[in-house]
Length: 131
Image (cartoon, helix red, strand yellow):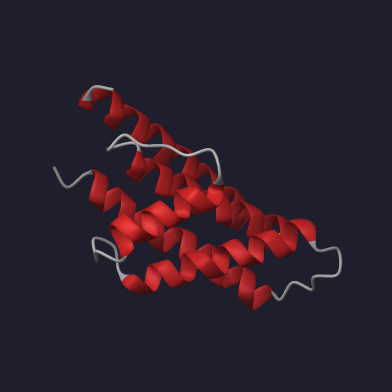
């Protein structure tokens, strides 16, 4: 894939991340916490995929996407190590929200997921636009 196409795909994925973040905020405001967790996670996921589009590399499974990102971008400190921990927590909360019928959502946890999505989106946008 040529660099121009990679950059366009990256920007497209970043727009998806922004849309997911907006949806998570709206759902949070309406107290739909499980759904807000889901959209916050997908904002995070699409932000990560925006970075990977620049290589370009892609994976089918979510865990492979996050593992690659953590290994090549967090552990190398291109992105702060703390964001790796936040991504891991967001993944767990999203899975619990989506698949565990007995999972009790705490509004403050959902608020934290939305903040993490916003933080990562900002970091990724800066990374993509640094050229």
